[in-house]
Image (cartoon, rainbow, N blue to C red):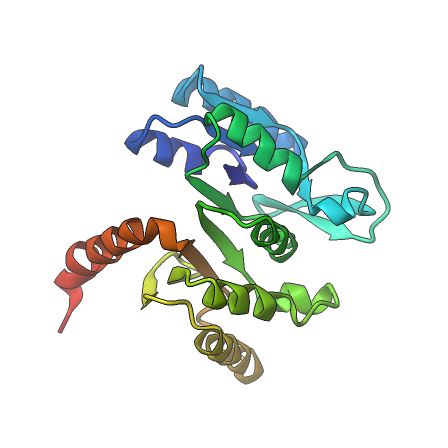
Length: 234
């Protein structure tokens, strides 16, 4: 599942490596037009597009306006406007139907809604890996400063593993067991950069794996460490 699919670049990358059905969720009208065009080129049969935005089950009728700017789009909550939503529960059901009951990966990159979406997904006891943008500054503006902490505390309690990337996509930390305190310190480091006025890392991306996918985490850790990063070691 690719939430915030944009024009289909993630779908193209995934299709290069695997043949699983792909669900692309994109609510921005302009991006959906390009996404449909690109999907026909990438895979004309097994990419399924939902022209919707995703909302938590408890907030299926959020007041929101859609804003498109600088090659991306995001929802302005409490804004004036109406957008079409699909709830996380309905989205998971749709994907499981395509996958004969199974989901391999959920990716969320929505420039704003990720904390709410991931919180809702974890509440539904997922058995699949999740990759998501984590920006504490956004949750502050939502009035939910505790949101990400609650997510990482649950991932730690449930024994999930995580790989942390900077906002440019470079990996910089492996967590055999997700540590909410370490991630909290990373967020403090990011905030400190903003206070000093020299920001190198604006947010992090997190790739988390449930205990049932520990072998996949181990393989990813080995591949990134031994193949990608190894040539750059001093």
